[in-house]
Image (spheres, rainbow, N blue to C red):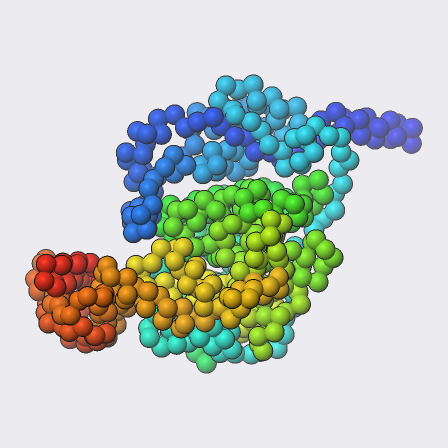
Amino acid sequence: MSNAMNKRFLIVCFLLSLCGYSQEDAWVYFNDKPNAAAQLSTPLNFLTQRALDRRTNQGILLNENDVPIHQDYIDGITAAPGITVKAKSKWLNCLHVRGTISDINALTLLPYVNRVHFADASLNSKQPRTKTINPVNKHMDVLANFNYGNSNNQIEMLNGHLLHQANYTGTGKIIAVLDSGFINVNSTAPFQRLFDNNLILGGYNFVSRDVNVYSLHNHGTMTLSCMGGYVDGELVGTAPDAQYYLYVTEDISQENPVEESYWVEAAEEADRVGADIISTSLGYYKFDDTNYGHNYSEFTGDTAFASKGANIAFSKGIVVVASAGNSGSSAEPLNHVGVPAEALHVLAVGAVKSDETYATFSSIGPSFDGRIKPDVMAKGQASVVANTSGNIQTASGTSFSCPIISGMIASFWQAIPWATNQQVVDFVKQSADRYVNPNNQFGYGIPDFQLALNNALSVNHNSGGRFLVHPNPVQDNLFVSFPDGFQEAKISLYNAIGQIVFEKNIQNTDVSLSLNNINSGIYFYKLNSNSFVQTGKIIKN
């Protein structure tokens, strides 16, 4: 091709891009969900029993955003000329699409489309813009690797070892880990205990639309190890007996708004399977295409797509924990906590050093609307993790302070199974060392999970409503705490066929009952005190 022809070709390509032929990302929102009421009458068609139980236990009603997107709408958008559907969200009743500006705008002519919202905000306001591609370095919040260490400090800093000593190790709780990949989790020693005990419940790659989670990227491997890793004498995660789902939502080849849509899809799946906690060491501020980046003014808690999804996840009874980010040393305003950690109902976790001083890389607050962010802190500089070879090393980033807290929340929530997700978050914040005097670096500070547990048990004990039967699951000793005004009671345990296997009269104290002679299994209990009767279920390990 001659130079003149080459120049004409480039000019034509440039003009075509200006005329709307370049590919854009956008969300297509629908007007409604036909037959939603009928679908809500059969919720097991779209939610597991465990997801329904979590709602019931916390007094959460089903609503229309629980219902899947109407399939005819999905089919119509998929068949539209020039449109590629990248992701979907039933919670927000929308699809993430890619296409030219004109093809995306044409979707508004469909009668069931409410609106389209471009990832490039300037296209929504019809303002001219110049497209700039500035690839973001995807270091995944990991700043450096250091020499070998041990995990005592990162657990003891939170008084998490005291909960472990009481057999609160996350048993019965499910954590969904949203990350970039989990290389060799299925084949290296630090995770063998999880597989031996059937604690890995499944996984999915939302980027490639398959179950390949074990052969791409190391970031999720390291974050998971902070919660579920176990190497005797070297690494003990903060929730070694919790159960886990592993979800890939991060496309390591690019930084694009579609990753927020993958994130929301995974959060919806975490809800569907009944997860209690979402742990995500991912954050969004700037994208490869500079027109797609978030502005600090958007960090009002419910503006960004992933932040909206995170808030809805919380409304379903899930505790959502996110890394605050590693931009603390960046120029203002890039040093602020990003998406989804800035969301109204996300517990954003910043990083401290082993001596509990601020790690200077940790992103700071407040949110744009003045809320305290980060919420709490944990060890994030020289955290002890497992790498993809199964070796124990240290690494730094809020990527690791986040799962350290997530695992502790699972262990803590095991100890207070009656608590709602809001109560769990409140107890954790209130136990933190700067709760009465928060600041932009530490938020409310470093939690003390033993103090949180003491406070929770005290509140429940004095609430006047119910007996507290804990821990559940139980291994050896079962404790019964009386509500105010009760002096004595009789506790009975029944097996699955209704036979009494244990019965005892107890007095108004924190009573310890030895269950050493009872076989492992599921039992039902009944507490009788005068005319008051309380029933429930316990698991004996």
